[in-house]
Structure formats: structure tokens, C-alpha cells
Length: 323
Image (tube, rainbow, N blue to C red; front, side, top):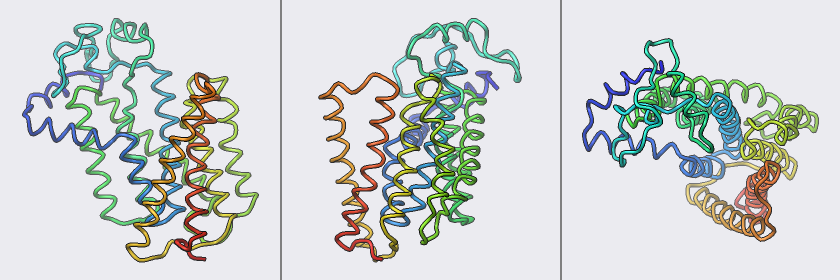
């Protein structure tokens, strides 16, 4: 699964249109796109389910980054001169022919060593694009259980996987690993959400919050001790759990409303979130609060919790959320 032959076969169909299509699909797999979609779902459709899907993405992100840092597997475009990056300028290769010799074997020892000797490198296994697409779309299906969502999810995940291979950024093993990680994130979250009672309009008990915290808090504690834990995603997950519980305890509300009411909620939330993002980052830079795992965790925690809480309180205060 670490052979370059499947990638070379896909790239044999290279054309300007296919390159544009695959590049566009990959661009739709970056964080800013998911941020926009989460905002629309959370404030335009269902606040609880939006927060929950964001939690799934954070769980998937923790596992994806941990595996990348731990395994340090190469990308095909870095270890084989035959693999191109369509639409990009040719870049140097660490080795000339470092792909696997058979379906079940690993990249060559020379390629593995060359990658592990690099610092601050971008690793391959698993594919972050594919794991995020799987976590987001399968999470969406988990909550809404619509057949058309499932069909679209499967087709989009396959297309995302093909785009990452066509662009020379991932082996077949990487994209399969991404599907596995994204699916596992949904399964873990499904167990977690039994305590949070996603979709219910009743208040959750402090004991439910305590059970969920017992899952997340050890990750927070271990961030400074375990390099494989990504501080940003751990802080994001903890911030989402705190935001969900705080919003639930502030007061009951309904997500109902006409189209324009929902649009206003989305716009107000985006403006507040962007303002808080700029403010928190400005303060962090002014006091030189950066450079350590805990600093990143706390900053991401605030950047996650405050926008949701402040947006909800303001929208509820001005009757954009009804009791």
C-alpha cells in the first residue's frame, strides 16, 4: 500500500481540468472550510449537534497528528522522482526511488531514515484531509441518519482520497488510514455523546459533564508530557466540552426560526468569533504567550470556548434564540 504505482497510474490521466478538480477538492479539505460549515450548522441549524460534530473533528485531529508525529512516514512526492505534484513547481526529493517494492511492504529503509532525519517535516500517514472528511461527514450522518447524507459522504471521502493520491501527497495506505481514523473518531464520540445527550433540549446533569471530563482531562494533563499529543486539538476538544456544558446550563432554548433569523445568528456569531480571535491572538503576542505546549493549549481553549459562549449569550439576550 506504499507503492507509487497506483499514484503514477492516476497521474497518467493528468490534464488541466483534472488537476483543477483534484486541487479544488483538496482545498475544500482545509480547516477554514470546516470552520465555515461548523458555524452554519451550529448557529443556523442545531447548536448542540454543531458543537458535537466539531468535537468529532477535534478527536480525529488528536489521533491524526499523534500518528503522524509518532510514525513519521514519508509522502510519495518526497521519496520518488517519478511522482509529480500536478499544478506545483517541481521540488527536491529526499531519495530517488523510495516507494515500497510490494503491496504489503513499507517504503525503503533509506526513505524512512531520510524523513526521520528532517525537522519540522510534513508526514504522510494518515491523511489529515481524508480523516477530517470522514469524521465530519460520517459524524453528520450519525446525527441526521439521512440516506442521501451517507451516499454523499462515501462519494466525497473517496474523491478526497483520490485527490490526495493524484496530487502526489499520499500513498494508498495513508488515505485508508485516514478513513480508519475518521471512523474511529465518530465511534469514540458516539460513546462520549451518550453522556452529553446530544439533540435533547433538557439540561444535562453535572455528573454527565463529569463523565465526559474524565475522558478529556487526562489528555489536557498529558499534553506537556507527551510530545505526540497535539496541544491545539486537545485544547479545542476541552474548550468544546466546556462550551457545550456552559451553554446547556445557562438556559434552555430552541434552534427554531425562519431563514433570515438563522442567517443573522450565523453572521453575528462569525463577527464575534473573528473579533475574539484577533483580540486573543493580539494579547497572546503582546505578552509573548507562545512557544510551549501549555501556552498553545490555553490559547486554543480560549479561542474555542469564548466565541461559542459569547455568541450564544448575546444572541439569546437579543431574542435570536427563543426559550
